[in-house]
Image 1 (cartoon, rainbow, N blue to C red):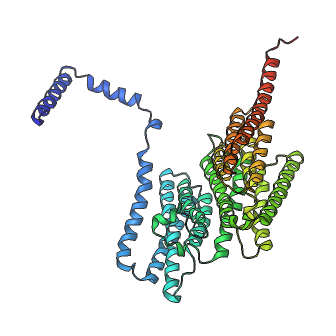
Image 2 (cartoon, rainbow, N blue to C red; image 1 turned 60 degrees about the horizontal axis):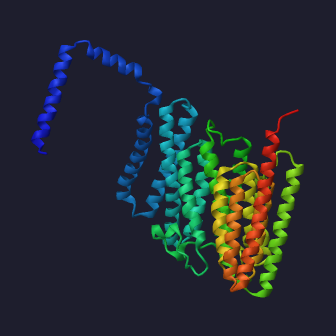
Length: 464
Protein backbone atom coordinates (compact mmCIF):
# COMPACT_ATOMS: atom_id res chain seq x y z
CA UNK A 1 0.00 0.00 0.00
CA UNK A 2 1.65 3.18 -1.17
CA UNK A 3 1.87 6.45 0.71
CA UNK A 4 0.02 8.16 -2.13
CA UNK A 5 -3.00 5.89 -1.66
CA UNK A 6 -3.11 6.63 2.09
CA UNK A 7 -2.92 10.32 1.34
CA UNK A 8 -5.89 10.09 -1.05
CA UNK A 9 -7.97 8.20 1.54
CA UNK A 10 -7.17 10.77 4.22
CA UNK A 11 -8.10 13.60 1.85
CA UNK A 12 -11.48 12.03 1.07
CA UNK A 13 -12.24 11.61 4.81
CA UNK A 14 -11.37 15.24 5.55
CA UNK A 15 -13.44 16.53 2.61
CA UNK A 16 -16.44 14.46 3.68
CA UNK A 17 -16.13 15.79 7.25
CA UNK A 18 -16.03 19.42 6.02
CA UNK A 19 -19.10 19.00 3.82
CA UNK A 20 -21.00 17.36 6.72
CA UNK A 21 -20.27 20.32 8.98
CA UNK A 22 -21.36 22.78 6.28
CA UNK A 23 -24.61 20.90 5.67
CA UNK A 24 -25.47 20.76 9.39
CA UNK A 25 -24.49 24.03 11.13
CA UNK A 26 -25.86 22.94 14.56
CA UNK A 27 -23.69 19.82 14.75
CA UNK A 28 -20.70 21.79 16.05
CA UNK A 29 -22.63 23.18 19.03
CA UNK A 30 -24.24 19.80 19.83
CA UNK A 31 -20.94 17.93 19.84
CA UNK A 32 -19.33 20.65 21.98
CA UNK A 33 -22.15 20.59 24.57
CA UNK A 34 -22.18 16.81 24.60
CA UNK A 35 -18.43 16.67 25.23
CA UNK A 36 -18.68 19.06 28.18
CA UNK A 37 -21.64 17.21 29.73
CA UNK A 38 -20.09 13.76 29.38
CA UNK A 39 -16.69 14.76 30.70
CA UNK A 40 -16.19 13.94 34.38
CA UNK A 41 -13.07 15.79 35.42
CA UNK A 42 -12.57 13.55 38.48
CA UNK A 43 -12.24 10.54 36.19
CA UNK A 44 -9.73 12.29 33.96
CA UNK A 45 -6.12 11.19 34.33
CA UNK A 46 -4.29 13.90 36.25
CA UNK A 47 -1.30 14.40 34.02
CA UNK A 48 -0.46 17.59 35.89
CA UNK A 49 0.47 15.64 39.03
CA UNK A 50 2.90 13.53 37.03
CA UNK A 51 4.47 16.55 35.34
CA UNK A 52 4.80 18.41 38.64
CA UNK A 53 6.63 15.44 40.12
CA UNK A 54 8.93 14.88 37.19
CA UNK A 55 9.60 18.60 36.72
CA UNK A 56 11.35 19.28 40.06
CA UNK A 57 13.27 16.02 39.86
CA UNK A 58 14.58 16.70 36.35
CA UNK A 59 15.29 20.34 37.19
CA UNK A 60 17.17 19.38 40.34
CA UNK A 61 19.21 16.66 38.73
CA UNK A 62 19.84 18.80 35.66
CA UNK A 63 21.17 21.58 37.88
CA UNK A 64 23.19 19.09 39.88
CA UNK A 65 24.64 17.61 36.68
CA UNK A 66 25.59 21.03 35.37
CA UNK A 67 27.30 22.02 38.60
CA UNK A 68 28.91 18.60 38.91
CA UNK A 69 30.70 19.04 35.59
CA UNK A 70 32.41 22.08 37.09
CA UNK A 71 33.18 20.93 40.64
CA UNK A 72 32.58 17.18 40.94
CA UNK A 73 36.25 16.21 40.83
CA UNK A 74 36.91 18.29 43.94
CA UNK A 75 35.50 16.19 46.80
CA UNK A 76 35.27 19.12 49.20
CA UNK A 77 33.26 21.23 46.74
CA UNK A 78 31.14 18.20 45.92
CA UNK A 79 30.36 17.71 49.61
CA UNK A 80 29.32 21.35 50.00
CA UNK A 81 27.25 21.24 46.81
CA UNK A 82 25.33 18.12 47.85
CA UNK A 83 24.83 19.46 51.38
CA UNK A 84 23.34 22.70 50.01
CA UNK A 85 20.97 20.81 47.70
CA UNK A 86 20.04 18.41 50.52
CA UNK A 87 19.22 21.18 53.01
CA UNK A 88 17.51 23.29 50.35
CA UNK A 89 15.33 20.41 49.20
CA UNK A 90 14.15 19.39 52.66
CA UNK A 91 13.72 23.02 53.75
CA UNK A 92 11.70 23.82 50.64
CA UNK A 93 9.51 20.77 51.19
CA UNK A 94 9.00 21.66 54.87
CA UNK A 95 8.02 25.28 54.08
CA UNK A 96 5.60 24.08 51.42
CA UNK A 97 3.91 21.63 53.79
CA UNK A 98 3.92 24.25 56.56
CA UNK A 99 2.54 27.29 54.75
CA UNK A 100 0.64 25.82 51.83
CA UNK A 101 -0.78 22.52 53.11
CA UNK A 102 -3.96 22.75 51.01
CA UNK A 103 -2.28 23.49 47.69
CA UNK A 104 -2.16 20.22 45.77
CA UNK A 105 0.20 21.58 43.14
CA UNK A 106 2.68 22.86 45.71
CA UNK A 107 2.38 19.62 47.64
CA UNK A 108 3.42 17.71 44.54
CA UNK A 109 6.40 20.03 44.12
CA UNK A 110 7.26 19.40 47.78
CA UNK A 111 7.28 15.65 47.10
CA UNK A 112 9.63 16.28 44.20
CA UNK A 113 11.95 18.18 46.54
CA UNK A 114 11.78 15.31 49.02
CA UNK A 115 12.81 12.93 46.25
CA UNK A 116 15.85 15.05 45.48
CA UNK A 117 16.70 15.34 49.17
CA UNK A 118 16.34 11.58 49.69
CA UNK A 119 18.82 10.89 46.91
CA UNK A 120 21.16 13.58 48.22
CA UNK A 121 21.34 11.81 51.59
CA UNK A 122 23.04 8.89 49.87
CA UNK A 123 25.19 11.26 47.83
CA UNK A 124 26.30 13.09 50.97
CA UNK A 125 27.25 9.86 52.78
CA UNK A 126 29.14 8.50 49.78
CA UNK A 127 31.02 11.76 49.21
CA UNK A 128 31.98 11.98 52.89
CA UNK A 129 33.26 8.42 52.61
CA UNK A 130 35.33 9.31 49.53
CA UNK A 131 36.68 12.39 51.31
CA UNK A 132 37.72 10.24 54.28
CA UNK A 133 39.55 7.91 51.87
CA UNK A 134 41.43 10.84 50.39
CA UNK A 135 42.34 12.30 53.79
CA UNK A 136 43.16 9.13 55.76
CA UNK A 137 43.76 6.47 53.12
CA UNK A 138 40.75 4.37 54.17
CA UNK A 139 36.96 4.44 54.04
CA UNK A 140 34.96 5.12 57.21
CA UNK A 141 32.00 2.96 56.12
CA UNK A 142 31.64 -0.10 53.96
CA UNK A 143 28.83 -0.09 51.43
CA UNK A 144 26.67 -2.21 53.76
CA UNK A 145 26.95 0.32 56.59
CA UNK A 146 26.48 3.29 54.25
CA UNK A 147 23.29 1.86 52.75
CA UNK A 148 21.96 1.06 56.23
CA UNK A 149 22.54 4.60 57.47
CA UNK A 150 21.00 5.99 54.29
CA UNK A 151 17.87 3.87 54.78
CA UNK A 152 17.48 4.79 58.46
CA UNK A 153 17.81 8.50 57.57
CA UNK A 154 15.28 8.47 54.71
CA UNK A 155 12.63 6.40 56.51
CA UNK A 156 11.70 9.08 59.12
CA UNK A 157 11.53 11.71 56.37
CA UNK A 158 9.05 9.56 54.43
CA UNK A 159 6.86 9.16 57.52
CA UNK A 160 7.01 12.76 58.70
CA UNK A 161 6.03 14.01 55.25
CA UNK A 162 3.77 11.01 54.50
CA UNK A 163 5.57 10.79 51.17
CA UNK A 164 5.01 7.48 49.39
CA UNK A 165 7.67 8.48 46.86
CA UNK A 166 10.31 8.87 49.58
CA UNK A 167 9.14 5.58 51.09
CA UNK A 168 9.64 3.94 47.69
CA UNK A 169 13.24 5.22 47.67
CA UNK A 170 13.66 3.85 51.20
CA UNK A 171 12.38 0.46 49.98
CA UNK A 172 14.85 0.36 47.07
CA UNK A 173 17.76 1.29 49.36
CA UNK A 174 16.50 -1.31 51.87
CA UNK A 175 16.49 -4.11 49.29
CA UNK A 176 20.00 -3.30 48.03
CA UNK A 177 21.25 -3.00 51.61
CA UNK A 178 19.70 -6.28 52.78
CA UNK A 179 21.09 -8.11 49.76
CA UNK A 180 24.58 -7.59 51.18
CA UNK A 181 23.62 -9.87 54.07
CA UNK A 182 23.07 -12.76 51.66
CA UNK A 183 26.82 -13.17 51.28
CA UNK A 184 28.22 -16.29 52.92
CA UNK A 185 31.43 -16.07 54.97
CA UNK A 186 33.42 -17.45 52.01
CA UNK A 187 31.74 -14.80 49.79
CA UNK A 188 30.52 -17.43 47.31
CA UNK A 189 26.85 -16.54 47.33
CA UNK A 190 26.13 -14.35 44.31
CA UNK A 191 22.55 -13.35 45.10
CA UNK A 192 23.60 -9.83 45.96
CA UNK A 193 22.13 -6.71 44.39
CA UNK A 194 25.22 -4.73 45.37
CA UNK A 195 27.19 -6.60 42.71
CA UNK A 196 24.90 -5.13 40.04
CA UNK A 197 26.33 -1.73 40.92
CA UNK A 198 29.92 -3.07 40.73
CA UNK A 199 30.48 -2.74 44.47
CA UNK A 200 33.56 -4.84 45.37
CA UNK A 201 32.83 -7.60 47.87
CA UNK A 202 35.72 -6.57 50.13
CA UNK A 203 34.15 -3.12 50.59
CA UNK A 204 30.73 -4.42 51.70
CA UNK A 205 31.58 -4.06 55.38
CA UNK A 206 34.45 -2.25 57.08
CA UNK A 207 32.85 -1.90 60.52
CA UNK A 208 31.51 -5.35 61.56
CA UNK A 209 29.68 -4.08 64.66
CA UNK A 210 27.93 -1.25 62.79
CA UNK A 211 27.13 -3.63 59.94
CA UNK A 212 25.49 -5.90 62.53
CA UNK A 213 23.67 -3.36 64.67
CA UNK A 214 22.06 -1.32 61.85
CA UNK A 215 19.61 -4.06 60.69
CA UNK A 216 18.87 -4.85 64.36
CA UNK A 217 17.83 -1.22 64.94
CA UNK A 218 16.02 -1.11 61.61
CA UNK A 219 14.03 -4.31 62.15
CA UNK A 220 12.95 -3.32 65.68
CA UNK A 221 11.82 0.14 64.51
CA UNK A 222 10.00 -1.27 61.47
CA UNK A 223 8.16 -3.94 63.48
CA UNK A 224 6.98 -1.36 66.04
CA UNK A 225 5.68 0.95 63.29
CA UNK A 226 4.07 -2.03 61.53
CA UNK A 227 2.26 -2.91 64.76
CA UNK A 228 1.01 0.69 65.01
CA UNK A 229 -0.35 0.42 61.46
CA UNK A 230 -2.23 -2.73 62.43
CA UNK A 231 -3.71 -1.18 65.58
CA UNK A 232 -4.95 1.80 63.58
CA UNK A 233 -6.30 -0.51 60.83
CA UNK A 234 -4.34 1.27 58.12
CA UNK A 235 -4.83 -1.65 55.74
CA UNK A 236 -8.37 -0.52 54.91
CA UNK A 237 -8.78 0.68 51.30
CA UNK A 238 -9.94 4.18 52.23
CA UNK A 239 -7.02 4.84 54.56
CA UNK A 240 -4.23 7.11 53.34
CA UNK A 241 -1.61 5.12 55.27
CA UNK A 242 -2.31 1.94 53.31
CA UNK A 243 0.89 2.02 51.16
CA UNK A 244 2.92 2.62 54.33
CA UNK A 245 1.22 -0.33 56.04
CA UNK A 246 2.25 -2.80 53.36
CA UNK A 247 5.69 -1.41 52.53
CA UNK A 248 6.68 -1.06 56.19
CA UNK A 249 5.46 -4.58 56.96
CA UNK A 250 7.41 -5.92 54.00
CA UNK A 251 10.60 -4.14 55.07
CA UNK A 252 10.13 -5.32 58.67
CA UNK A 253 9.93 -8.96 57.62
CA UNK A 254 12.77 -8.69 55.12
CA UNK A 255 15.10 -6.86 57.52
CA UNK A 256 14.52 -9.34 60.35
CA UNK A 257 14.66 -12.18 57.82
CA UNK A 258 18.06 -11.04 56.55
CA UNK A 259 19.39 -11.27 60.12
CA UNK A 260 18.02 -14.81 60.45
CA UNK A 261 19.40 -15.81 57.05
CA UNK A 262 22.84 -14.43 57.83
CA UNK A 263 22.80 -16.10 61.24
CA UNK A 264 21.91 -19.50 59.78
CA UNK A 265 24.27 -19.45 56.78
CA UNK A 266 27.21 -17.94 58.67
CA UNK A 267 27.01 -20.32 61.65
CA UNK A 268 25.68 -23.49 60.04
CA UNK A 269 29.13 -25.17 59.77
CA UNK A 270 29.64 -24.89 63.56
CA UNK A 271 26.77 -27.26 64.34
CA UNK A 272 27.72 -30.09 61.98
CA UNK A 273 29.26 -32.41 64.58
CA UNK A 274 27.31 -34.51 67.08
CA UNK A 275 28.00 -32.47 70.21
CA UNK A 276 27.32 -29.04 68.74
CA UNK A 277 24.33 -30.35 66.79
CA UNK A 278 22.74 -31.65 69.98
CA UNK A 279 23.40 -28.35 71.77
CA UNK A 280 21.84 -26.48 68.85
CA UNK A 281 18.72 -28.67 68.95
CA UNK A 282 18.31 -28.12 72.70
CA UNK A 283 18.67 -24.33 72.40
CA UNK A 284 16.24 -24.19 69.45
CA UNK A 285 13.71 -26.28 71.41
CA UNK A 286 13.98 -24.12 74.56
CA UNK A 287 13.73 -20.84 72.64
CA UNK A 288 10.85 -21.98 70.44
CA UNK A 289 8.90 -23.41 73.37
CA UNK A 290 9.64 -20.32 75.50
CA UNK A 291 8.51 -17.83 72.85
CA UNK A 292 5.48 -19.98 72.05
CA UNK A 293 4.51 -20.09 75.75
CA UNK A 294 5.02 -16.35 76.33
CA UNK A 295 3.03 -15.56 73.23
CA UNK A 296 0.22 -17.88 74.34
CA UNK A 297 0.07 -16.35 77.83
CA UNK A 298 0.04 -12.80 76.42
CA UNK A 299 -2.66 -13.73 73.93
CA UNK A 300 -4.87 -15.03 76.75
CA UNK A 301 -4.19 -12.31 79.33
CA UNK A 302 -3.34 -9.08 77.47
CA UNK A 303 -6.20 -7.20 75.84
CA UNK A 304 -5.66 -6.42 72.15
CA UNK A 305 -2.37 -8.32 72.22
CA UNK A 306 -0.40 -8.37 68.97
CA UNK A 307 2.58 -10.65 68.37
CA UNK A 308 4.36 -7.65 66.87
CA UNK A 309 4.67 -6.34 70.45
CA UNK A 310 6.69 -9.44 71.37
CA UNK A 311 8.78 -9.63 68.20
CA UNK A 312 11.03 -6.58 68.91
CA UNK A 313 11.82 -8.07 72.33
CA UNK A 314 12.87 -11.37 70.73
CA UNK A 315 15.00 -9.58 68.12
CA UNK A 316 16.69 -7.48 70.82
CA UNK A 317 17.33 -10.55 73.00
CA UNK A 318 18.84 -12.48 70.07
CA UNK A 319 21.01 -9.48 69.17
CA UNK A 320 22.35 -9.07 72.72
CA UNK A 321 22.60 -12.64 74.02
CA UNK A 322 24.08 -14.23 70.89
CA UNK A 323 27.43 -12.36 70.90
CA UNK A 324 27.61 -12.54 74.72
CA UNK A 325 27.31 -16.34 74.80
CA UNK A 326 29.37 -16.85 71.63
CA UNK A 327 31.97 -14.03 71.62
CA UNK A 328 33.10 -12.85 68.21
CA UNK A 329 30.00 -14.12 66.38
CA UNK A 330 27.58 -11.25 65.98
CA UNK A 331 24.79 -12.99 64.05
CA UNK A 332 24.78 -16.33 65.89
CA UNK A 333 21.80 -15.40 68.10
CA UNK A 334 19.59 -15.28 65.01
CA UNK A 335 20.64 -18.82 64.07
CA UNK A 336 18.46 -20.09 66.91
CA UNK A 337 15.32 -18.11 66.10
CA UNK A 338 14.80 -19.43 62.59
CA UNK A 339 11.77 -21.40 63.76
CA UNK A 340 10.57 -18.44 65.84
CA UNK A 341 10.59 -16.34 62.66
CA UNK A 342 8.16 -18.82 61.06
CA UNK A 343 5.95 -18.65 64.18
CA UNK A 344 5.90 -14.85 63.85
CA UNK A 345 4.78 -15.03 60.21
CA UNK A 346 2.16 -17.67 60.98
CA UNK A 347 0.71 -15.81 63.99
CA UNK A 348 0.50 -12.50 62.14
CA UNK A 349 -1.16 -14.23 59.21
CA UNK A 350 -3.79 -16.08 61.27
CA UNK A 351 -4.55 -13.56 64.04
CA UNK A 352 -4.29 -10.25 62.22
CA UNK A 353 -5.51 -11.67 58.91
CA UNK A 354 -2.38 -10.20 57.34
CA UNK A 355 -2.29 -10.99 53.63
CA UNK A 356 1.31 -9.84 53.57
CA UNK A 357 2.31 -12.33 56.28
CA UNK A 358 0.29 -15.03 54.49
CA UNK A 359 2.21 -14.63 51.23
CA UNK A 360 5.56 -14.44 53.02
CA UNK A 361 4.73 -17.47 55.16
CA UNK A 362 3.78 -19.67 52.23
CA UNK A 363 6.75 -18.52 50.17
CA UNK A 364 9.55 -18.41 52.74
CA UNK A 365 8.40 -21.45 54.66
CA UNK A 366 8.29 -23.53 51.49
CA UNK A 367 11.89 -22.50 50.70
CA UNK A 368 12.97 -23.21 54.27
CA UNK A 369 11.33 -26.64 54.35
CA UNK A 370 12.90 -27.55 51.01
CA UNK A 371 16.37 -26.46 52.22
CA UNK A 372 16.06 -28.48 55.44
CA UNK A 373 14.50 -31.58 53.88
CA UNK A 374 17.07 -31.89 51.10
CA UNK A 375 20.05 -31.46 53.46
CA UNK A 376 21.72 -34.70 54.51
CA UNK A 377 22.48 -33.48 58.04
CA UNK A 378 20.67 -35.75 60.48
CA UNK A 379 20.25 -32.95 63.04
CA UNK A 380 17.92 -31.11 60.66
CA UNK A 381 15.31 -33.78 61.39
CA UNK A 382 14.55 -32.07 64.69
CA UNK A 383 14.12 -28.61 63.17
CA UNK A 384 12.00 -30.03 60.35
CA UNK A 385 9.67 -31.84 62.75
CA UNK A 386 9.35 -28.76 64.99
CA UNK A 387 8.35 -26.57 62.06
CA UNK A 388 5.85 -29.12 60.77
CA UNK A 389 4.41 -29.59 64.27
CA UNK A 390 3.85 -25.83 64.64
CA UNK A 391 2.20 -25.59 61.23
CA UNK A 392 0.03 -28.62 61.88
CA UNK A 393 -1.02 -27.28 65.29
CA UNK A 394 -1.96 -23.92 63.77
CA UNK A 395 -3.91 -25.56 60.95
CA UNK A 396 -5.80 -27.80 63.42
CA UNK A 397 -6.80 -24.77 65.49
CA UNK A 398 -7.71 -22.84 62.33
CA UNK A 399 -9.13 -25.79 60.43
CA UNK A 400 -11.65 -23.55 58.66
CA UNK A 401 -8.75 -21.97 56.82
CA UNK A 402 -8.69 -24.62 54.10
CA UNK A 403 -5.76 -23.08 52.21
CA UNK A 404 -3.60 -23.58 55.32
CA UNK A 405 -4.87 -27.15 55.73
CA UNK A 406 -3.98 -28.09 52.14
CA UNK A 407 -0.65 -26.28 52.42
CA UNK A 408 0.15 -28.29 55.57
CA UNK A 409 -0.60 -31.58 53.82
CA UNK A 410 1.38 -30.80 50.66
CA UNK A 411 4.35 -29.21 52.46
CA UNK A 412 4.46 -31.89 55.16
CA UNK A 413 4.27 -34.89 52.84
CA UNK A 414 6.84 -33.53 50.37
CA UNK A 415 9.25 -32.31 53.06
CA UNK A 416 9.23 -35.62 54.94
CA UNK A 417 9.60 -37.71 51.78
CA UNK A 418 12.52 -35.54 50.59
CA UNK A 419 14.13 -35.89 54.02
CA UNK A 420 13.77 -39.67 53.97
CA UNK A 421 15.61 -39.89 50.66
CA UNK A 422 18.22 -37.31 51.76
CA UNK A 423 18.93 -39.44 54.84
CA UNK A 424 20.11 -42.29 52.63
CA UNK A 425 17.36 -44.79 53.43
CA UNK A 426 16.47 -47.26 50.68
CA UNK A 427 14.43 -50.30 49.79
CA UNK A 428 11.29 -51.39 51.57
CA UNK A 429 12.05 -49.16 54.56
CA UNK A 430 11.46 -46.10 52.40
CA UNK A 431 8.13 -47.49 51.25
CA UNK A 432 7.11 -48.20 54.85
CA UNK A 433 8.03 -44.68 56.02
CA UNK A 434 6.27 -43.02 53.09
CA UNK A 435 3.19 -45.12 53.81
CA UNK A 436 3.20 -43.98 57.46
CA UNK A 437 3.58 -40.35 56.38
CA UNK A 438 0.60 -40.61 54.05
CA UNK A 439 -1.50 -42.30 56.75
CA UNK A 440 -0.66 -39.59 59.28
CA UNK A 441 -1.59 -36.72 56.99
CA UNK A 442 -4.61 -38.64 55.69
CA UNK A 443 -5.94 -38.91 59.25
CA UNK A 444 -5.15 -35.25 59.84
CA UNK A 445 -7.10 -34.14 56.75
CA UNK A 446 -10.01 -36.48 57.50
CA UNK A 447 -10.28 -35.01 61.01
CA UNK A 448 -10.42 -31.39 59.75
CA UNK A 449 -12.90 -32.35 57.02
CA UNK A 450 -15.14 -34.13 59.53
CA UNK A 451 -15.27 -30.98 61.66
CA UNK A 452 -16.29 -28.90 58.66
CA UNK A 453 -18.98 -31.38 57.62
CA UNK A 454 -20.35 -31.55 61.18
CA UNK A 455 -20.60 -27.78 61.37
CA UNK A 456 -22.28 -27.52 57.97
CA UNK A 457 -24.81 -30.26 58.77
CA UNK A 458 -25.56 -28.52 62.08
CA UNK A 459 -26.31 -25.28 60.27
CA UNK A 460 -28.56 -27.03 57.76
CA UNK A 461 -30.71 -28.72 60.44
CA UNK A 462 -34.16 -27.11 60.88
CA UNK A 463 -34.55 -25.01 64.00
CA UNK A 464 -37.12 -26.35 66.49
